[in-house]
Image (tube, rainbow, N blue to C red):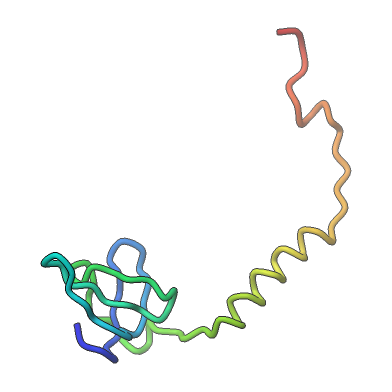
Length: 89
């Protein structure tokens, strides 16, 4: 892996741009920009530009907050007997 290349992590399909490459204890690691996490390079495959979508931190944060807010804005009425088990135990 080289800095600037696009790579896909086999286990999750995460695609990112390689920001940095390091070797530690005989294992080569690459830092991907997608989640700012380090990945073992032997578990990365080259990726196509069409698979890569760059997100800024603000975009990811805003999406999370909107999802959380949607859940808070809905009022739900529930019959408690359908939610908890009933009967003696």
